[in-house]
Image (cartoon, rainbow, N blue to C red; front, side):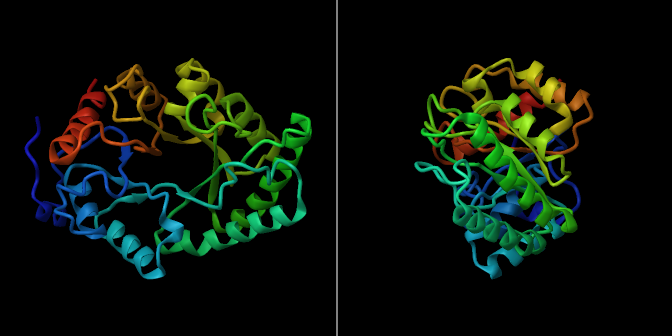
Length: 289
């Protein structure tokens, strides 16, 4: 087990280790080791432990002051900003799938707001979930409606060099009724939109539940994938707590030249400092080959 590194080490230029991939924790994952010291203390601990990126699903809802603080701290620590959630997700009712013009306009308004948020943190990626299915509308019509909304969103982001990533979700365990559920489906939509500002997020946790076949699907969708997230299954906890061979998955995407971010979108399997250290040790093990 690695020895905890003092927060002050993050002020220097040499972290305690160098991971092969850019794993991105989220706020709260190491709050005990950061002594409940807030955003800056947590980022400093992440950097001291060798993590070079951050994910923050809640970023868009934070104050401008906090967004700017996060951006400045990331720059000081030489860390990258990962994805943040770009819009209000329709978990129970159709919005982008049904082609409703007012729902589309509301969605595009939120995408325009993301431009300033991304600039404050020197970010590039934001995640989009197209929302709930319309049970009265054929899936082909829904796909056309979603594609049109995403084309318009991409046109907003392109001039700024920003990228929206669409995420496929499992319906068996976490998100019943969602429209976008399979990697090939997401790949097809990205191809149809045909914009550098609309790409695919491959979430290993959701993909394992929905379809498995992880490495072949990664290979087949590779041209559209720009971002990975993960959690082991079952449980959505750190690598090594479930059935996925993350060492092989990480080794595979590294061998393909992946230099993007791998978002740690999962919980800790154990509470407290011991549980936080277990997460770090899990990534050391999965990154070793």
